Length: 452
Ligand code: PLP
Image (tube, rainbow, N blue to C red; front, side):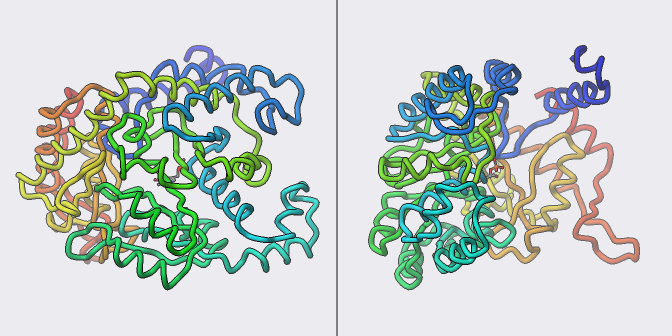
C-alpha cells in the first residue's frame, strides 16, 4: 500500500478502507466471496502488461509463451474439475462468457454467409451491406430463458442487455403456488416457441435445477441447452451438485463467472462439447477484447484450489450454512421464497415485515450486514424497489463461519427487519426507499456483526 500511497494516497486509503469494511461487516451478498492470497497475487503482476490476442499457441503477438502456459493450465484444471471436453478461459466476466456462448451457438447452428464473413474479418472491415445481412440472417433467432422475477439473469434475453436485442425472447417461470420451476409449463412454451437456445441457470433461485429434464426438453424442440452456472459453479466444482443437478454432462455449453461461489478472480469461462469448441475459441476478437493474462493466471490458481479436497468440504459447508440460515429465519417467522433453500442462497420476502427490498437493504447495511435487494416472483414493487432480499453464504463460509453462527445471523437479520419502518417522502407520503431504524439497534447489531 505504501507504494501506491506515494503516487495517489487517496487510492491507497480507499483500498485500506475496503479491507476494513469487508472485515467489519457480514458479507451476505450471494455473488461475492473472498479470493485467496494466492489468487490475488497471481492477478497483481507483470502479466497485466502483456497482449495475447488469439488462442493457446496461436497468438497475434510475439512473446506469449508464458501466457500460453497459464491459459493452458487454467483450461486443463477447468476440464478436469468439471469433466468438460473443452474450456475457454478468456471471458472477462460472466456477461462476456454468455456473449461468447450466444455467438458460438449462432455460428454453429445458423446458416449465415454474413456471419461467416464476420468470423474471418475484423469487425471494422464489415461493410454496411454485411451488417444489414447479418441482422437479416440472425434477427429472427429465438431464445428461451428464465424470467427475471423468477431469478433469471439480464443476459438471458432481457432488454437492458444485448441478448434481448439479439434474440426474439420468451421466458419461463416458476409455479406461483410453490415458487418452484414448472418443467411442464416450460416444455409447453418450448414446444410452442421452438427456440434456438434454451438458457438455464439463475441469479436468485434458491432451489436445484434438473438439467437432465432441461436437456430432454431442448432435444425435443431442437434447441441447444446452455447453462449459466455463474452462481453455483462452486457447488458443481465441490461435487455438491451431481447427477441431474450437474449441468456439465447435460448441456452442450456451460458458462460461468469465476468470482462467486468458485472463489476465483473476477472473470468468466466457457465449457463446451467438441462440436462447439472452435466457435467458442473465436470469442476474441469476435465479441471480447484482448485476454487479461493476469486474470487467467489467477483463474488457473483458483481452479487448482477448487480441485483440492478441502474445496469439497467448503462447498458442503456453503449449503449447510444456507440451510441453517433459512431455518433460523423461518423459525423467527420470516417468509422465504419457495419456503427454504437447496443451494447457497436464500430469498427473503420482506413484504412480510411491511418493507420494500430498498428499505431492508438500507437498514441491514446501517447494521453492518451487506445484502442486496432482489425481485421476488410476481413482485408488486418492480425491479427497482423490489420486495426481496437475497442473501448467500459463500463469503461467510470462506471466513470459517458455521451453522451456529448462521442461526445467530438469522436472529440479527430478523431483529433489524422487525425494528425497521418505512419512512416518508418530503411531502409526507409513504416512501418505498426511506427507512427508519433507531441508531441503538443498528449500533448493537453492527457490534455483533463485527465480532462475528
Ligand atoms: N450470469 C449470472 C447468472 C449472474 O448472476 C451474473 C452476475 O450477477 C452474470 C452472469 C454476470 O456476471 P458478471 O458480473 O461477471 O458479468
